[in-house]
Image 1 (spheres, rainbow, N blue to C red):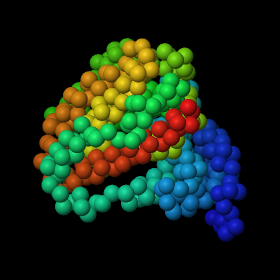
Image 2 (image 1 turned 135 degrees about the horizontal axis):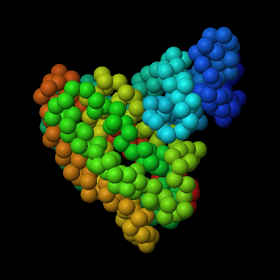
Image 3 (image 1 turned 90 degrees about the vertical axis):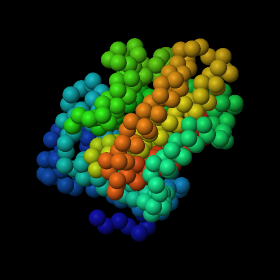
Length: 351
């Protein structure tokens, strides 16, 4: 595709391009439609090319380009989860065009993100020792500037903003884990299933963790419909969610996913303690902090399960590739910290 050298992102209306993509998603028999009228994609694809060129320059710049790319990627990824909505919304789930589009954005983006991790260093580490050191540090971390802001300064308006942003993931929590537990039965699979069952409340909706998140939102009279606050979610948070899809949907990334999940389970108690403390400081009810509270209690246990019953046995099973668990862990730490900082900035703006 020829793109004018004079074209810049200031010339582009990302909202129009995303709206066009939404219509593309809803097109009946999408691949056949594209085959019959390939020109229909040209405006969208030109915007996509410009966004990818700009985003590739620096992950700290071009926020509008990153937001556009992550929103497009999220809209494709979410088709892998069932939302109990109109079945026709999934008509293009296996579209060749959508598959290639996701691969195009995802491959480039993952290459950019990998630049933040020193992979040669990871390959030369003793994986078990490195994991034990990391998990010990993240279980009881030194207070961060972002964490202290949430704990000591966030107002009630900011708390609502926090819930609105994190609801994108909180209301469908643990869905990615469900994508990786199928297959041959063994002790590792059994432990992952055990964690999933606890996240899903043992099959009781009232005990499912996402139900606790919904209860927090209801306490504030907020909309508990999944994705109701999609428009305000920072690109860094979307990137965090999209990364989970990337590493759980491809079995070759299984070890990276385990490292990622290990970081989540280990780091959540300390991070969520800041949110719980903020809620208590603001005088909120137990319902308004219930989600944080249950995670603090359960994820202390889940983190140890993930380390001792999942990650360490996998090191023995996959000796040559075990460093990928460290890659998943370190990358998730980076992505989570970046997302947390973006949420803090949005909360501060809301206040």
